[in-house]
Length: 460
Ligand code: UDP
Image (spheres, rainbow, N blue to C red):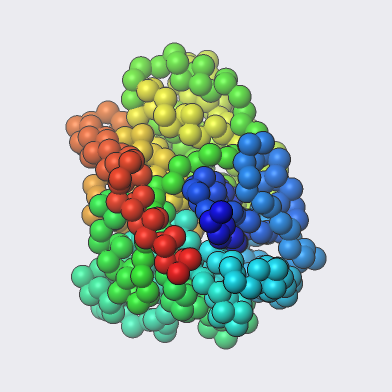
């Protein structure tokens, strides 16, 4: 009987990271000769256990609770850096113990670790215990490379036009407004900020980085990432979603979509972590109404309010907006968690307005949808930049949740993407990319071969 390699996966505690890590877990677990253990905080493990198919043989193990918030759902942006720090402090000892126990149980066949890039310190544990370590990036190569460059090149040397020239890619310029305020205005002496920078620096120290992208789609980003980190890169994506960890709101919105013309509806969501401001929300609603486009909008309370709290339409949206849109059969609001994949794959959906979170980008392009970008956080600004400048499937409508957004601007962009020739051309390109993405993970595809190569390396 052949040896079974134990692969320990350690995702960061945010939805946008847990979901693709679970996809990766299933993918490796389905291969002969590997068993997979996913580790995380107790509350996340409970949720993952409830959503994992009963047929799955992925092991789920909880590590010591940090004694505070156990995932990013429970923290604000201001608490983000200190959360990363507290996770390392509280979980590092139990993670180290788990790995060293696994080594002691079978010294001839030690486990290998694949962890989240935000948990850079795991590479130190692996080095100390002498086991193979790689990172998995659930975000795109281009966005990751720019993000890595910005974190490692502080303090910034601005050009006269308020841009940064990236040392490893002088042809890529980043404008001041494309850097999220948390990074731009971060205090280099703040312990939490410093610690996050350390994680970024550590991300170049492992044996390589798996990225949830396809080389043919993101060749510029993959090459940039190789140069930027100096480590081997394995583009193994897109790995598609196979578990969701929240109940969807059922079929009501799918039935609503059934009543609409092909490619006529715009889906709007800002992901699982971010919200826009109350004034922005008001202008977005008015612009949408003026555009006369059909829409499904996943609404969350604006910045400054409880993200998971009740959505008060009468307070944050124009008077009578929701009722008017419903009566005219023009648009619906979804409170809570939307069945995003089902909506995006519906023939009536023609476009997506989103924060350019990587999962949403892959899901949109896989379904051949034109995009309207409104980046809000971290690498989303650069993902949006790439989709607009390099790929041509996206128009940026706004940046961040502090900018002034004007309804007429929203209306013009929504119309041009949903009605005009520009939108048709963007959908054509998106369909082409969708094909590239499917081929990459199809039989003999480049991403499947990259995964084969990686696994060989991991057991060597
Ligand atoms: N998602 C969903 N319903 C929602 C909001 C998000 O199914 O109401 C899913 C979405 O399909 C994607 C993930 O949650 O797979 C969000 O990841 P992404 O990288 O787009 O953004 P993040 O939430 O990390 O900002």
